[in-house]
Length: 553
View: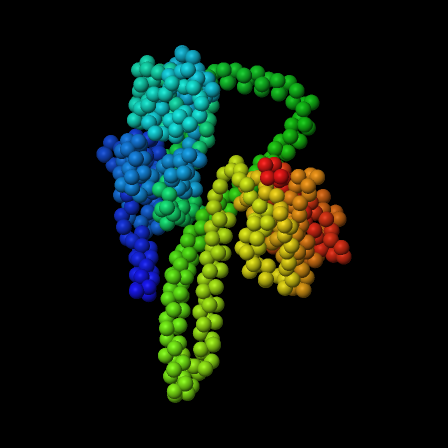
């Protein structure tokens, strides 16, 4: 009976994987949220989200069906399981308790709209005591309910309804998404309203599914990564959002801007000779800074895409590994059941062949082989889970409590193959009772990976060693990690420049020189620093320190 249940569970697991690929996926969307998603004049779903979803379905081989309705209704439909995913939803910590979000495919800004000639509000704090209309169950509705802004909240089913109410004289302000607001202001001919102040509340906007539906979300994330890498997503983005992205300067302000620009131009011309050399120097400085920022953004985008692909691959590896972990105990039980019969035959008839080898040898080998296979499958699952955790996308502002020893253990498991490639002498010593830290554990993990990989690449042969050691500095409230290698070391003239952007001694091997610079920035944001020193008689010692979590001291 036990064997039958296990086999039945394995069959159900395999069928669930096939059903994801064959079923029609119901995609929900707001019927009036242009240019992101809306019903066009022919009654068909249209907009940036719709075209992006169709492109993902094409590259991932998914069958989809759109269900467009009022936002509050499609959000309820997702909660009730009537639809599978929303193609556009702003993520937040509160929403994250119920929904899972893909990497963002757009950034949504919010704007305060007011009637022309009436008092303005340039920030949320100035909405206290004012009549404000928002979309029902939209992100700003959630925000006003969860934060003590003090506004008098009125709701509308769509952004268009909210702007029409404001235009007709109702309420003091409308709080809506910036691009849909600009789009609807033009399409509906609402000439007596305008955005006031600068757009604010930059929010990540992407696909959303219910908690527990990671498999479907992984397919959307993988499809989005493919469109990113092929340039297709940027084409769709430019088609629908590019022309509106640069809007926002009222025409009546152009005269003022032109006047002050002329004044500034005259001032610059009058002092051009004196300041010419200084201006050139400043321009060169800014150009270098922009170049550094551009390279860092490119590197970050590559890492984001790689993380999405790693997460997808990890998910695919976990499926067959799960089958192995499910079936191997059944095979072990079957061997134990057969062993008595085989032993009886061995005693009666003597040795015989089993799988091409003598039974007298196989009866010792088979249990060991099955146990090795079981241990190997468990190790694969643990490594894959570490990879999924490492590739998980998190906001830089996320602060959590973590232990440096746990991060070091996870990192060495991920790099086990890489380390064995370079050295036969890798060791670590983790301090006991190490205080916890506060920050982003995933970012610290990235730093440690970068430092260990650098140490591996510095080794000249496999006999040289790498040693890791964690420690606690109570007088400075710091915990730290020392990474010591016996590699070729760092020349004294290069030591002061190690953290400079683009400085690298491995440019001919593809190094960009951004790794240590970015790592240093991450460590500084955690209240610590990176230090490099020559290790005697040869090699390098890197010390990373980060601040302790005060409540755990």
